[in-house]
Image (cartoon, rainbow, N blue to C red; front, side, top):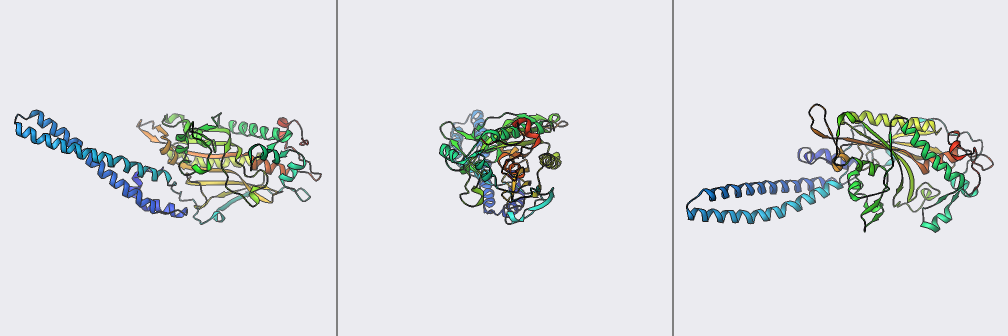
Length: 423
């Protein structure tokens, strides 16, 4: 959430960011109007409360019956007006705050301006496509032929966009999750095992509500929401806490399944396991001092790059432009890996600096060592990695001419074989 002081002092900056994202900046004017009306009502409320105190004191000190009666009438009139003002004040604040929650973050100066995802900027490309020596096949063909991916029974159990992984491929995914968590833990990230369902407050703090309510799965009876990403419960982990500066930065990693209502219903994205309503992901997260978050983002970018290289992936890094960047982020790097069967780049990680946007919503603060004053933290998050698309790239890159699929050496201890056996 943006600081209300920014609307009072520099609304043009917010309008510029919203326009660059392709949104309507008119909402900024409405926030300003509501805030001015609320401040006027709040000022009048305080004046009336003070007036009642003064009049009550004067009534207690006065010995003149007529004067006392006149001041009692003034007190009654002030009370009636105060009730009206208080009745106006709360709705004004609620309307203003509802609009604030729906507005996206500002943009970092380094974030490219653009009108579509086509204007994302490729920063670097690392490695080369695997030299297979034959026409590569797609993971959905490989998985179906080896009976390692069961699309039909996934649909039978749960409906469209669900699938079942079988045998060695199920073990390979499980092993990949464990390997990723070990990699991050060995590089200074503390592992968390988190709830897979959260309350609405956690989603609101992370910037998922109210903006993305239609994309989330909700149990209205218990007010539980299935997590769309581990970023949500990690943001809620320290909500309403004050962390000592000496503890910073805090680095966390966590595995969760993720649940989202994917809206794509046609085209290439519906083939295979690229897009589903349920998928696995390992998340990276940092809480830092404001002055450290820019460097922390570059640190996370370098960490994910090392991870991609350890996996042997041919990948590229993009700086997301204003039209494609996430709601809560000011600056984002996307990592895309090459899938030789699909013949396309697949996003496997997105690393973002949200600065104080989530911290203000979730009340995430730290106590500055010298002043002991609570200040807002900065939050950063990244995929480390998204499992389905990482798995796709590994499957398609390690396929063989006879249709079999090799197991990357680092995963062989988890799978128990060097070739995926038909299930």
